[in-house]
Image (cartoon, rainbow, N blue to C red):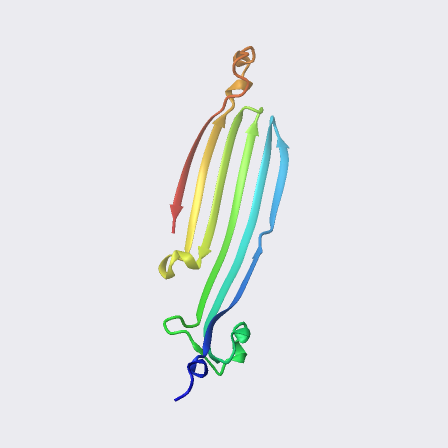
Length: 165
């Protein structure tokens, strides 16, 4: 029979991760004075990709605890039961535009739309359009509000939006 210290063999778990992420988001903005107002238009595009890979391994058969930090120092390497190789992939793309007009520094109009595609939306709902219309009034710019000392800025806003496949 072998002594107890010769039967003892150490084991260690390791996980190799490889994660990558990149994103490109260019946009362009156009400004122009029209009549008593200011027109601003913005268009842009987004594209992203994220990959996460994981490989959990178990090494065993170590002859010394000093070697436990090296997976190749063991006599056997195997996948950890119940934890196999995993790959997570996420992709996103979107295009958007916004037009904003401010007339006489008092009246606001805003139109926004974007079309997004994502792997997180599910196979049958990959792309969605989101649109909004907004209007506002900065009432403290009106002549009848200028003499109020207790109110320096006041604005009313409203917005309608829609989500459509």
